Length: 221
Image 1 (tube, rainbow, N blue to C red):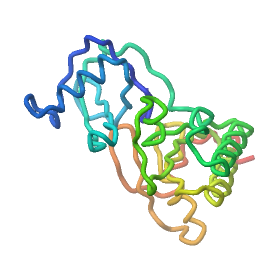
Image 2 (image 1 turned 180 degrees about the vertical axis):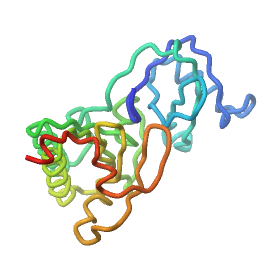
Image 3 (image 1 turned 90 degrees about the vertical axis):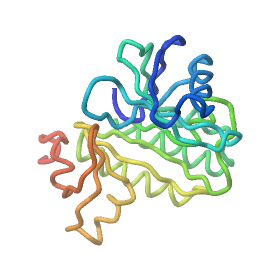
Image 4 (image 1 turned 120 degrees about the horizontal axis):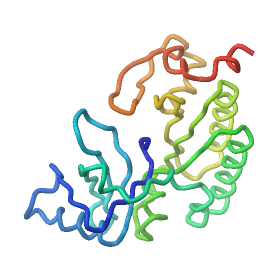
C-alpha cells in the first residue's frame, strides 16, 4: 500500500479517530461512510501499530478532512488512485482532452498516473466536492530517469491547456514524492533542496537524493 491508494474496509470495521470524538457527529459520518462501502485514502503512516487512512467529506458537510486508524485486518481491498479516464466527464471539454492527452503520454513512456483530491472524491462518491477554484491533483509514479523526463514534459504541456491549476506529485520507486511544480522549477534553481514526502515522514532533499532509487542502468545510459 502506498500513499493515495484507495483503501476499502469491511463494513463492520472498528476505527479510532482523534478528529471525530464521540458526540461530535463526525464519528457518525465516518460510520455511514464505511457502511456505504466508500473508500478511504492511504495516508502517511506514523510509527506504531494500525493503518492511518483519510477521507474528505463532501461540500454539503463542509468538505472536512478526517483521519482514522484501523487494524490491518479490517482492510478488505486496496486499489490504485482513480484513473484519469474516469474523471473526464466531470471536466470542460478542452480540459478533458488535455487530461486524456496527459494520460496517453504517461502510459506511452511506461509510467503510471492517477487522480486524487476533490475530483477523485466526486468520481468515487457521486457527490459535489469542487468549486470554481478547485485544482486537479495527480500522483505519477516513475521508475527511470527517462520516464521522469517524459512525465515532466507531459505535465507541463497539460498544465497549459487546463481551465484550472494542475497540482500533485511525482513519486520515485522508493516512495519518495515531490510536487511536480517544485521539480519543474529546478531548471532555474538547480541547488534548491526539495520538500519531499515519504511514506512515513517529510523532509528536505537534493535532487540527487530524491532520484537515487531510479533505475541506475537507465540513468547512466
